[in-house]
Amino acid sequence: MAPISESLAQFYVNFDVVDRPGILAKCAAVFGRHGVSLRIVQQSLQDDASPTDGFPRGWAS
Image (spheres, rainbow, N blue to C red):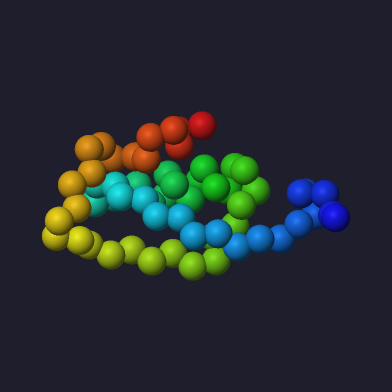
């Protein structure tokens, strides 16, 4: 088995955040700081969405 640093994997993540300029950039920056690339980003508006703040909890570091 290869070390995790030599492994490739695909994951799906979903964030519900406030629709405000810069939120997507903040999320992408966190992934980038950890060496994770984003292949596809899909942004959509949901009428019933009600996030509590502008940034996913625990993603500030």
